[in-house]
Image (cartoon, rainbow, N blue to C red; front, side, top):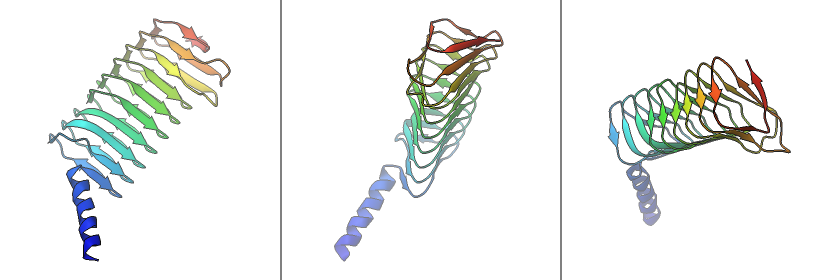
Amino acid sequence: MLKKQQILLGIVILFLACNVGLNRSITIEPEEVVRKGPKAINGNIVIGERARVSGICTSVNGSVHIKTGAAIRGAVSVNGSILLVDSVQVYGNISSVNGGLITGIGTYIQKKVRVVNGSAELRGTCIDRNIEISNGHLTISDSSLIKGSIFIRKAQHPLTITIEKGSLIKGNVHAKTGEAPVRLIIRDNSRVMGKTTHVTMVQE
């Protein structure tokens, strides 16, 4: 019995040392500096304003909420949404599976954005690489700049990609043949500089 208790105590200490929350949420306080990325199972992750997290924020069965001015290495959410409030800096990838993504004005993402089975709303956001979206709508607005391309993967139902309010896509917008139809709406002096393939484009 004592040995089992020691093992359980060791597991708890290991979880705490690795900044892992099991059946609980994790909050990083405003302006706090954290080396390891928090991991939550059946719980949410909240990164406070202007906090700095060197690792990747990972949540399973919970959401990830990054507040204004915070900087993180990246974020992964499975069965939960990701919210990046204004002026968030992400020096890696963003991945949401079975959940949505919302970004605020002044957000910067250095690498790829991937959203599966959820919609994404990007406002005033700069992304250095590609966006991949599956089974969800995508709205890019408020003078966002996407330096890579947009790829629509495995669309199982009709999707709408909306680019508006002066946003610019430097790469392509690409969907695959044989999948559900994709409508691309471009308005408010927004532009796609690359090619558009297998989408129905509506210029407003």
